[in-house]
Amino acid sequence: MEAEWITEELIARTRKVWSDYLGRDVPLEEATEILLNVHMIADAFHQAAIEAAEERKREAEASKMADADPLAGWCPEI
Image (cartoon, rainbow, N blue to C red; front, side):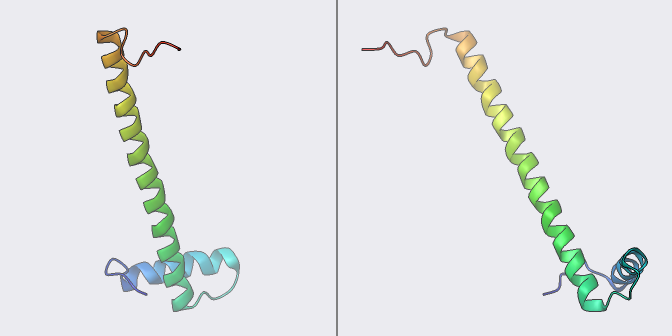
């Protein structure tokens, strides 16, 4: 599985960095897997940030509505 954003230069840099870090040669396939894994985790963090921002927006809107109508959402216990 390869992606268009993975260039030869990016793979070469990834191989060098990880080969130096691991103290062994990192083959092309492993470097590609590393890049895809990093991309997936970055995407997960990005999606979580978007969802958190949307939740904060919903909470702010609900707070504004509650300030405008102090009885909004109130339900007497029966």
